[in-house]
Structure formats: structure tokens, C-alpha cells
Length: 280
Image (cartoon, rainbow, N blue to C red):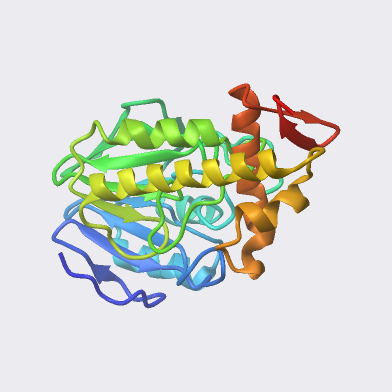
């Protein structure tokens, strides 16, 4: 498969069935920008229309050439779903997604079709299977293109960086379980919401699982080293000492998710925002 540069606004053909358009929303958390995918050769499905940027929306409409039949959202965070309503108004295509939870970083979205596990979204020449993957967001869905095994991963798997797990809607246990379930699927390549295509998908998924488990162990050891219990700000420099300090604000959310999991597992306890070992 070709790997053209991530240049915003320019349709890039990844193979005979899939075109990528990068949104102009580059940043620390979005990399080069949010990837919008158009899937199909006759009729087309849009996956993750992205931010409500008119130039990006018009690029999608132009690439769709009057053949857009569905709009899919992997989740309802502000860099993936806001353009859905405008794109629907311009094309008449219905929206399929899981409804948004009530959080500060989700947009309100009332999909025409609420997706469940293994639902198929189909139009002429396209069949996409919905794979529920909670963790980064409780309503996160990946989409498996049945014809070639390409999995559109949204923010469940990103190229070039790890995913922020943001409690209470984000959940580390759910994230790990979702990754493990993907290992059971016949996936040929990963098409992430940010970054380039990822080859050797099962190896990448296993790498991500092991990365999270190693981080969990660092969190566990940081709590054990805290004599009288420690807060998230106290634990962060020790548990994320390999992460640039500029990213610590976002890393604190994933740290909370790891701590929540360890509390649920009965390994540590939390009292008044301070975490300590149960053996202390």
C-alpha cells in the first residue's frame, strides 16, 4: 500500500477502495490532523468527518463526487465528529454512530442509526463491520472493511503516539480488553484516526498491550514507594518519567485511569484522593 504524506485537504488514495483526507487541525494531540476516510469505489462511506472546518467539509464533498451514502463516526470527540451534521446537510447521507455520553469533550450527536457490536453498514460495493472498542471513549467503535481487512481505528489506536484514557468516560480496563478482542479478528492493516497506515496489525496491538502493562507496573511501583499515600501530581513524575513534561497534563488522565484499574483490582486503595498500597 502507498503511504503518501499527511497533507491537509489533499485526497490521498491508499488503495483502490480507500481515500484519506487529513483535516487542518494539526496539534499536540492530533498530530498532522484528523484522518477522514472515504471508502468505496461506486458508492462511498465517510468515516470520521472530523472538525467543523468548512474547507475540510468541502474537500470531503468534492472527493465524494455525489456518491456519499453513509457518514460513520468512531466516537464523538471534538476532532472526529463535529462535521457530521454539516456533511449530512450537504449530502443527505445518514449518520451511524453510538450516541454521545455526557462529557465536556464530546459533541452532541443524535445518529440516524445507533450502532451495536457486529452491525454491518453497507452500500453498493462496501461492507463495514462495527467493532465496539470502549476505553478511550465509552462509545468508541472501530470499523472493519470486509473486502480487504482494513480496520479503521479512530482513537483506539493511533500511529506515532499512545492514546489518552480520560476517566470517568475513558476506562483502562475496557481499553485493554478491547485491544485483546481485536487480536481475534482477521485484520490486515490499521487505518488510524491520526497518522499513517500501520502494517503488521496484530504485532502492533500486542505491542500496545504490553506498553500499557509496563506502564501499569510503573504506576504500581510508584504507589508502593509512596510512604503515606500520594496524589496524582505526586505520582506523575515517577510513573511518567519517560514522557516529556509538556505532555504531563494529558498523561495525568491516563495515570488516573491506571490508578482506577488498580483500585478495582484490589491492589491499591484510594482515600481522599491519595493512593497507597493495601499492605502499607
